[in-house]
Image (cartoon, rainbow, N blue to C red; front, side):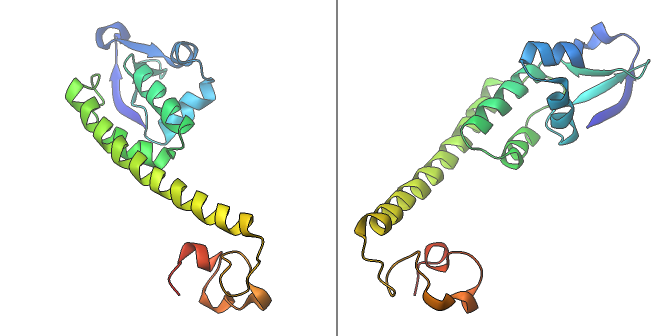
Length: 158
């Protein structure tokens, strides 16, 4: 979100215009605006109402791009970035803390993927189409009263 304070001398706080940030980050200007609207990037306004960004947002944009590439949602990215300072680049300690958080996230994702592989390999590979054990088959919508979605997969307890 754009900060309310206005700077008379953009060079005094080491800020760059949105177009330059977008070019340097390799993203469209609309992406920078979108990230700002989500609160992922801090911005200030010049006396002429030009949107300016601190130079260190280039690291934030790179962090966002890498995170999204590896399946981290923008809301999860926002949680992490909310803990970082907006007025200066993150310190080594900040990045170390983020790294630990990512390690926990990756461990959860690995467990989910292992379970998915086990369930889908067993289900698709078996060919039995058992009406009572198969996690996918739901004869005559017998599980419909239990709630929406694939009930045996979402809640594997009988």
